[in-house]
Length: 279
Ligand SMILES: C[S@@+](CC[C@H](N)C(=O)[O-])C[C@H]1O[C@@H](n2cnc3c(N)ncnc32)[C@H](O)[C@@H]1O
Ligand SMILES: [Zn+2]
Image (cartoon, rainbow, N blue to C red):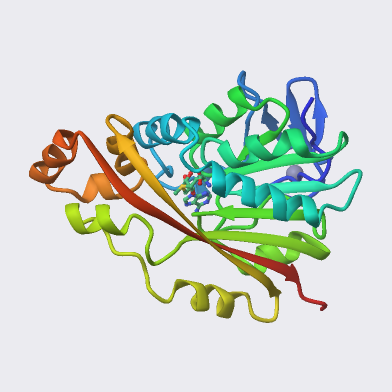
């Protein structure tokens, strides 16, 4: 049964407890646990119009990641997390978890008693994640608002190609808590981006993130990970479809992509490992 322990009510910020098929606070705000096991903690007027990644992107990402193309990244994340894991009763939160792939790959390596959570504001993402990874608890929430976790309750935070909220990350992290931010490196899919005029990758992303975290988290380690991808169809199309790129392409470019029998390109990721700064 996935954990509830550090979850808080999005309305009054009191702890949530599991009561039958729902989560409740002591002011009786009630949030139903969906059939698939996720919980929507987005409140009324705060529900954004855009609900994050849509079903087509999520399905493409699930197919692509399921074939193991980004396994070296998943292995590197697991290695860093395990090197810093607090032992029993640790709490892990994957922010912008999507369909749950990286948390799902990590979970079997963690000690029994660990609580693992994924947060995403796409309901479809939480639904897919909860169905496939029932050992973790998935919640629908917006990282740009107050995230529904107690102060100083999270030991390890993952943030993989997803938006960040440094002040909230710092609030929920335990003293000495770790934050792993993964971003695409400047050479990520370089050959494919040149071939198809895909979106640029921000050149100065790493220093910008380190500056955003200043005073809250200290950068301890960076890892640059590069490997080659040899992609047949339909995996090549899935790779583009799982990012916003596909939706920015002209119909001609989309047709060009689908007509390419296979393509070789490099994957390039940067893993930034932070520790919560002493306040
Ligand atoms: C590029 S995907 C990465 C998903 C996953 N980490 C992975 O690498 O497979 C970005 C994710 O962030 C989520 N997201 C975007 N804006 C968000 C927000 N404001 N709050 C919570 N999640 C958000 C999207 O729904 C999407 O699932
Ligand atoms: Zn409440």
